[in-house]
Image 1 (cartoon, one colour):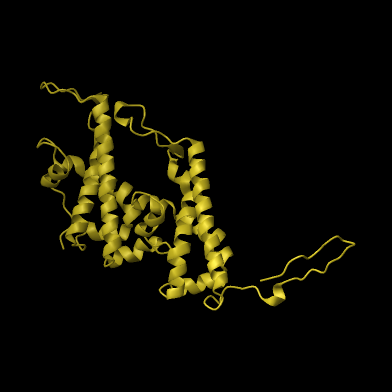
Image 2: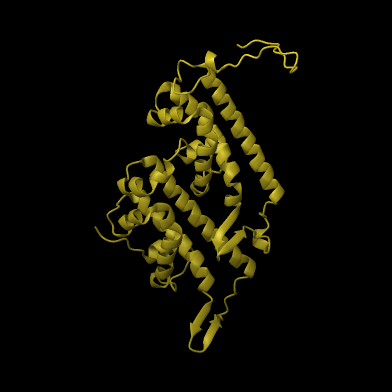
Length: 319
C-alpha cells in the first residue's frame, strides 16, 4: 500500500489558501500536529497504519487528513509572519498592496483552525468507536474505553452532558477509576461487582448497570474530574486555565469561577450518591437475585435488652 500523501488539493480543500502556499511549506507542521494532537488519542501503532497506507478505510483517512491539516494550519499561523535568518528575526511585510490581517481576526483564525481540528478528531474517534472493526485501534487505544462499566461516550452522555466529547470522557478516566473503587465497590461489595463484570449481559446485572451503576459512575466521575477538566496541567510545566477574554475574538467564553466548579462537583456527587443508594436498596430487596452481596441475616441483628441502670431501652422490632 502507498504511504499517506498530502497534496495541495487537500490543503485547499480543508483550508482556505492560495497557490503560493505549497504543501512542502506545511508538511513539517502536519508532522508536528500529528504527533501533538492525533497520536495521543489514536495510539502510535494505529497512526502508523494510516501513514504507511495499510489503513485504507476512506472515512478514517479523510477525517485524519482534515484533523491533521487544521491542526497544522493552527501551528503554521503562529510562524507564518516571522522569518529567522542570519541577521535575526524579521516580520513579514507585504509590498503588493494586500491588507495585513488584524490581530483580532488572526486570533479568530487560530481558534477556528484549532476548533475544527478537534471537531474532526472527535468525529474520527466516534467513527472508530462505533465501527468496532479496527483491530489495531481496538488493541492499542480502545481499551481505555472499556476498563469500567461506563464503556463509551454515548453511555456517559446519557447521564452527564459532556457535549459528546471523547477528550473530556478520557480526561474523566481517573475519576471513573476513583468512583469505581471508592464508591461503587464498597457499596455493592467486591464479590457482586466481580460477578457483574464477568457477566454484564445477564438480565439482573444489566438492570443494575443501566439503572443505577452507570448514572452513579458518570456523576461521580465528573465530580472527581471537574477541576482536572477545567485546568491544563503540564502546559509549560505549570497549571493553566482556559481564558480567551483578552481579545475581540474571545468574548464568548470566560474562565468558570472556582465557586461554580465547586457547586457542580457537589451537585454531581449528590446525584451519584442518590443512584448508588437506590442501587443498594434494590439489591437488598432482591436477596435471591444477588446472592453475591452479603445480605444481613438474623444472626447479624443485635437485640438490646431493656436496662434501667444504663438507661438503654429497646422500643421497636426488626423487619
